[in-house]
Structure formats: structure tokens, C-alpha cells
Image (cartoon, rainbow, N blue to C red):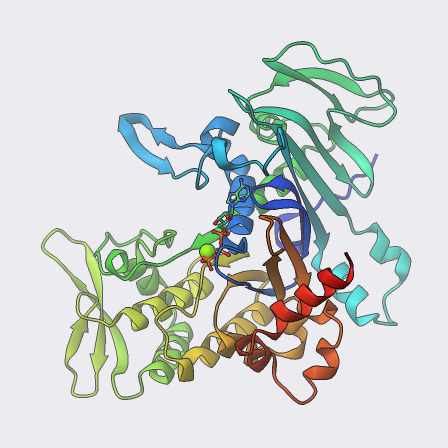
Length: 439
Ligand SMILES: Nc1ncnc2c1ncn2[C@@H]1O[C@H](COP(=O)(O)OP(=O)(O)OP(=O)(O)O)[C@@H](O)[C@H]1O
Ligand SMILES: [Mg+2]
């Protein structure tokens, strides 16, 4: 049997569905290359990020309790910060379980569908796989899997509840699951406290679908989260630490790695000069007595300003560059309020940077923002995946809509830009009137 599996680089995340997760009773977001999320304070933007963190935690191999709570490594080092609010605050009011469903599609298939390119045979496209991974978690004293499944092109890879099988649940510690096997499904018991995806991945089996399991887990594991803090970025670190941390840890060695490539260094300096024309001419890296390195901005008169004295906005901008240009940047990168600390007249640099890098690489970005400028400078294609998160008047329920799906949006942006509408509160007003009209 020939199996087409989704292999890391070619697959993109095309959507996330949430049920009873935090303030989302039932919501769905469609994803493209650049996904900008706007919405009032406490509308649910960071809750959506938490859903992606939950999925990422699965790929790290943690148990459900660890994903929601915390994970410490040997020696008591904190490895994972858990989900804000922990298990007690993860459920939508009144629910006893939540569900997340994520879909993946081949980049080529998604693009071709969008462009409806005449040269590509439909049949060939349809052979490129879609994958759908679903997990439903019961949250009581100990969180357990209620349902979990992975489908590739509508064919089951594994499923605790396949439609054609009678499901018997054995006990609370284990969960039964059907695995795809010819000619009959194989039934096995798994621990109910750890996602089956992670359990199957760690087996490294040679089933026809193990490559798919690996690649789905890889995709989830490659999701990165950034909420850079200037004081963290100012810390020197040892050379070779080339993974930028969530809070901007290792900024200096990551940028040093970028600068090892002459062309990348040139591009990086050009971006930086756009931000601070009078200051930065180049970057340099200095060692401290322990061998740790710290970046320095080289100014016009050759004066070096180390990260200790660099401005917060400069460091934040450098963190975005490091995330997009650093070693192995693929996958979905999630930024919290990425315009933080940037002067409004410089925010367009972020959209330019995002659009350039997502064009050059198989990269997806999801960014929450309160910035009208960021919306204003998005290209028409990126605006297609800009979404609004909003809540009803007296309800915690978060809803998600693409801006282009709000009636009249397309007509309005013919003579007003999307940022202007944001400033005026038009998006929230429009969805409020719609929901009132729908009552
Ligand atoms: N389990 C839950 N059930 C219902 N609502 C919840 C739950 N957990 C959190 N919330 C709501 O979500 C809000 C926080 O949402 P979130 O942090 O995503 O806001 P945000 O859109 O990121 O806002 P900001 O722009 O201020 O960062 C809380 O104020 C609370 O109202
Ligand atoms: Mg937030």
C-alpha cells in the first residue's frame, strides 16, 4: 500500500477549531501565511494562542496534566510554563471537556486552490494529503483523553471512536484506540493521561502511517511563541545557543548565527537602519569574561552600544528579525502584540518584513495586535486572513470572524483603509449590530 504522508516542510496549518476551550464555546479560525488577530482587551486573542500552546505541548510529549500545569525537568528546572489559569480555568463555563481540531494541508494544494491555477491537474492535487487531528480532553480531577483521532485524506490513522466500530471504554487509566491496519483495524489500549499522538510518536513504529504521525507531531512541535521582554534580551548567552526563547532568550547568539551569512547580515543591518536611521550601522558581538556573548549596535562614529543600553523598541524589532531569519525558522510563529514598543511610523517595517519572509520561506505567522498601522500596511492577500475576535455584550463567549467576512468591509476598504476602520471601532460595531439583528 502506498502512503502519501504529510512531510514537514510542505504542509501548513490551515485551521483550528475550538470547542469549550477557555472563552470559546465554538469557534474556528482559518489560517493563511500571515494571520493578524485584532480584538478588544480580554476578547480572547491570547486564549487562542493558548490553544496553540496546548497543541504544541502535545508534540513535546508532555502529559495532559503537565501541558495544562507545569513541567519541571530533573533538578527542578522549569521546562514548560503550562497554560494560563491551569486546568481549573481551561473550560468554557458549564463544560466538562474541551476539544481542539487542527487541519493541515499541502502548501501547493492550498495555494493552487486559492489561485485556481489552470495548469495543475485536479487529480494530482487531490492526491496531496490533508490531515485532521482532533483531541477532546475531559477535565475533572485528572485530565484524561475523551476522544482523539488523526485522519489523512479522510482515511483513519487512529481514532478512539471510529464511526464504524463499537467502542468500549475499559477503565479510567486507559483509553482504547483503533489503529489503521489491513485488513482489520487493530485495537490497543493507551494511557489516558497522555495524548495518543505523543504515545504513538515515541514508539517510532514502522506502521504505514508512522511517518504521518511523526510529521503531524513535527508540525505542532515547530510552532513557536514569542512575547519578547527587553530585559531578557539584554542577557548575554553562550555562543551556539541558536534557539530564540519565548521571551527573547538567546537573542545575541541567534543574531550572531544570522550574521555568519554575509547576505543575511547585510539584510539585517538594512532592516535595522530603517528602524533607527541615525543609529545603527552594523552589529557586533562582544564576549564577556565567561565567554558569553552580547550584541552591540555599531553607530556612525563607530561607537558600540551593547544590548544593555540598546532601546527596548530596537531589541523587540531585533527579536522579530531573529525569529524570522534565525536558524530553522519554519512552521507557525506566534507573536503577541508584535508592534509593542515600535513607533507608529515604523510599524510598516514589520508588515514588510513578515510579507517578505513568508514569501521566501514556508513560514506562517500569527500575530495579535492592537495596532491600526499594522492592519493598514497589510497587503490585500494578507488581509484575507486578518481576523477579529469579539465577545457578546454580557457573555464571555469569544467569536472569530475574518474581517473580509464582515458585511460591507470589502466596499468600505475601497476608500478607507483597514487601519482607519480599526481606529474608529467599526469592526466591533459592525459585529455587534449583526448579532443584535440576529437575535
Ligand atoms: N475558562 C474560561 N471561560 C470563559 N472565559 C474565560 C476563560 N478563561 C479566560 N476567559 C476570559 O478570557 C479573558 C482573557 O482573554 P485573553 O487573555 O485572551 O484576552 P486578549 O484578547 O489577549 O486581551 P489583551 O488584548 O488585553 O491581551 C478573561 O478576561 C476572561 O474573561
Ligand atoms: Mg492578550
